[in-house]
Amino acid sequence: MKNIDKKDFNFQEALVVEIKFLIERTKDEVFRATNRSLTLLNWDIGHLIEVEILKEERADYGKQILATLSQELKNEYGRGYDYSSLTRMVKFYKAFPEYQIVATLSQELSWSHFVELITLESEEQRMFYAQLGIQERWGVRLLRERINSMLFERTALSKRPKKLIQEELSAINRKGITNTDLVFRDPYLLDFLGLKETYSERDLEDAILIQLQEFLIELGSDFAFLGKQKRITIDGTDYYIDLLFYHRGLKCLVAIDLKLGKFQAADKGQMELYLRWLEKYEVKEDENSPIGLILCSDKSEEHVELMLLNEGRIKVAQYYTQLPPMEVLKAKLHRAIEVARKKES
Image 1 (cartoon, rainbow, N blue to C red):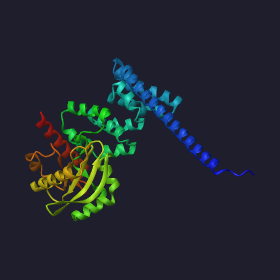
Image 2 (image 1 turned 90 degrees about the vertical axis):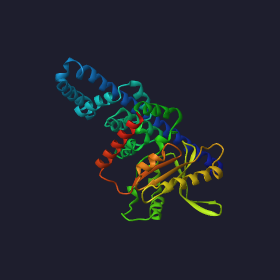
Image 3 (image 1 turned 90 degrees about the horizontal axis):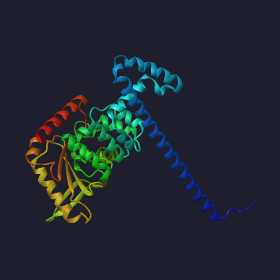
Image 4 (image 1 turned 120 degrees about the vertical axis):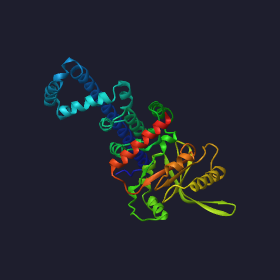
């Protein structure tokens, strides 16, 4: 038997790797093309049913026709065309009535993504989760978790006028996530830390570091962890920044200060000191000015409003280590959105 030369073996190994790459790439392309075709087919069916059956004069007995139609399609093509599936397709068309938008989104989102999106009430919500899902490459499970955690309502963008929301979401395709209204949330949901009712700031920080991956998911995909307890020295006095991150989209450092109690006016001065030191000694030529995020267990809304925070480089947000009932949280967020939009107008 002929001995295999080492060079021949390396060549064969490299060839196998390359062929595997080509196979996997093609499988992915076929899957994406099939999914896109299925999504557009479902939109076409929903459009046809809505226009030809449910909206015209036959609307009075449209449901009866739809039931008969679904039975016939189910018998020939399977359960994917039963009554509930056809009504879902109609809902899909009504939630996304513009074909071109669906054609564009379906290049990145699966039909299963759209099934989650059509449960949302407003166009702004649907486009928010669609655009961020594409930008941050969310799977269906993560998309569902983001919706359930009311991510949209926890961003500053949700409190803006609808026209501005639409403009900002449209800009994501061109320049990525570069608006702080999209990046920062309020409140942050840190129930995954597993902290009990009584804990110290060090306990909070240690828990975040242990669950760093979960914390990064809650912050957003463009955050990169740089370090903890960053020491800075000013006039011989040492100060420590609790957590330091870098945000790729914003192209800047993000300093996070953890507070157990209510936000205090002095917290702003402390963060300003940190940011000015970072600006002087850490920021590189191609980076933007650093941003500070003060995380408090209680935000002190009037303090934040009077000090004009959240409009500049310092953000203040509340965090929950134990979640309130979701209905309570939902009502609180919706109330905050209404108040903010009234002030904007």
